[in-house]
Image 1: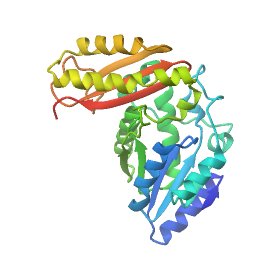
Image 2: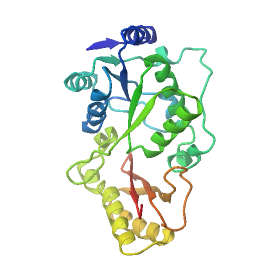
Image 3: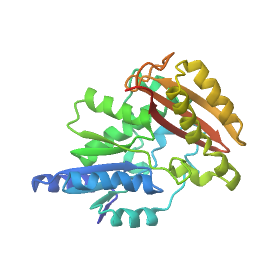
Image 4: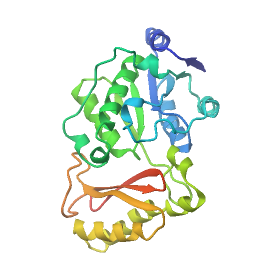
Length: 282
């Protein structure tokens, strides 16, 4: 497994593989890998000849009061998991390598970032779109795999790839959960035992609303009120949003008439956790 720390090294590696006629699958991450990340690597592995993982905590997608400086890290464990998963190259740049002192170019989308997480994290998806554009140009993959837990991020990437004519196939990996239903996340490491017990409120709220929709409840305000009451019955919780929206445009809906995205973000202690599911008739 090659470990490449500069853009030039990564581009040279990828260009050499391309000259050999080899294809490249790519999984971009911010590190602190868990089974969810490993599942993305497992999806990418059989799709191409080479499997590339990037580890980079991207500063441009963090707001001024977010957890950039505290974001968890264990590079050696990440490298061990990558090797076990069959990764052939790890791109491991630092901030100065990705953004020099005179950096001034950014990528923004008009509509998708206006919804869900974009409301409380206004610079986030511009930072995501910018760094993923850079990573695509550096790694030069044929296919890239992103987790569906970050549903809005996946939608942003797919739209960006379409709009900017990247010849890259985007694959969405299913949410990987703990045995009690909590979606796996690097930020789960922040949770105290008491907060961890409350964090299951997200997945349980999703299951509750699925049941209500199956029972015939279609009113979004009614569904949201029930989810809010349920989540706030758990200690250490503060709701950022609970929304039901169109799964492609992310525009809010008033009633569940067809397949609908249920997305929620909840602050549990100092951890901002997200989860989602598609509910309703398909």
